[in-house]
Length: 172
Image 1 (cartoon, rainbow, N blue to C red):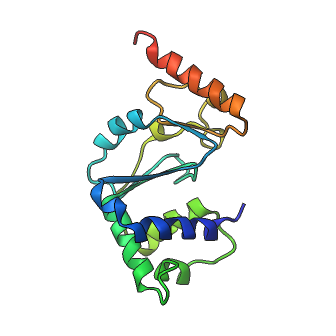
Image 2: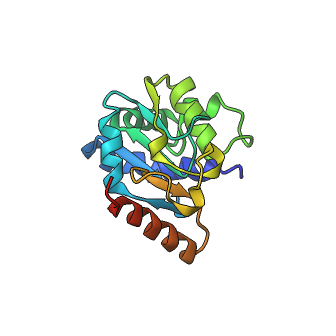
């Protein structure tokens, strides 16, 4: 799905609200992603200087995006530089539009165009089939996993959540 424009609007709302400035990290999570915010704290502690954290060995994957305050401030500046503040000026100007999904757009925007470094990868952020995380559907791939993707029904979502919480309760 080529959905970059939808998420350009989402990040515009985030950057224009200014609420991100009160936090070290800003996290966007898709609704079909089972998310455990308490597990995220342990992950971000290991990346104190990261601009953003890739969640997959293949790059940033859209179900969960974790950006530092510095990254969101830089992105906000690019929005402010545009003529109407509705899209990030340089990121839109320098990418081939209509060809990318939101995660590819955001990673190219932050890393290649806005030159935010360092970019770090942590596979604990997400478990899903696109990133070769085994048993992703059963949500039993580590009690430290921050999120599991993708669950399109309430029953599947609840089953995943229960399985992962059960795993976390087992003696380590």
